[in-house]
Length: 267
Image 1 (tube, one colour):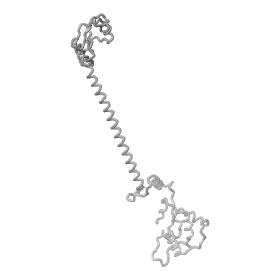
Image 2 (cartoon, one colour; image 1 turned 90 degrees about the vertical axis):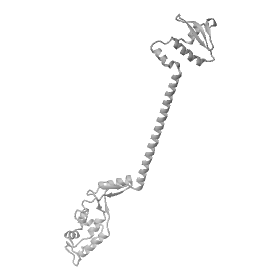
Image 3 (spheres, one colour; image 1 turned 30 degrees about the horizontal axis):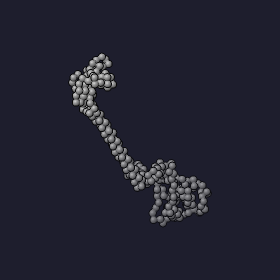
Image 4 (cartoon, rainbow, N blue to C red; image 1 turned 120 degrees about the horizontal axis):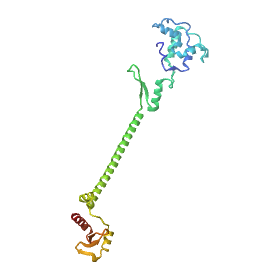
């Protein structure tokens, strides 16, 4: 053990360690032990003579040894102090640390609190960075959370695609229906559009106007009769005289289309 071993350590001895050391008092400065199988170094001799050097925090306890709860004992000889000190080390002792001040232990507390993990250091690098090993339950819970998030995203994406598909289908159906309606409407014919664009389309009168101009389709005004229609002489509101075709009710749809096309050809 070197003099600076315990100085930079975040650990400090528990309160009962220093009183134990103060009870071990050598009678004089230890130089060597007679009959020992090996010789101590100068630092070991100094440590046996000044046991407070083992822990920097025990210096005050040695200075105020009178406050020790242990009874005062007589000084010990060199052989006794070596045996007593060795016994003290063999029996081990407790150390303490402050997790709120030391950054390493603060990280360890965070690791234990968030990941229920185990703290360690990477001894393979010079800086020995802190490492946190999460528990199996924490890893399993993270995997389960990731699976739930993936399932949620998959369901959301599938629902979005379905809604978009339904919307596009409805839009396509509406467009197709409009085109069919336009195709079945004679007024949407290309020829009709051309006539309307160049103001060549024949004048349009309402049924009431035509009925009034023929006196309610009076037979006296009938000038022709056919299988599907009758023709009446009409005196229009603007003073014009014209012929009005009145379709029979048996085939209104077919005759309406034929009659409309016939009018377009005549005009």
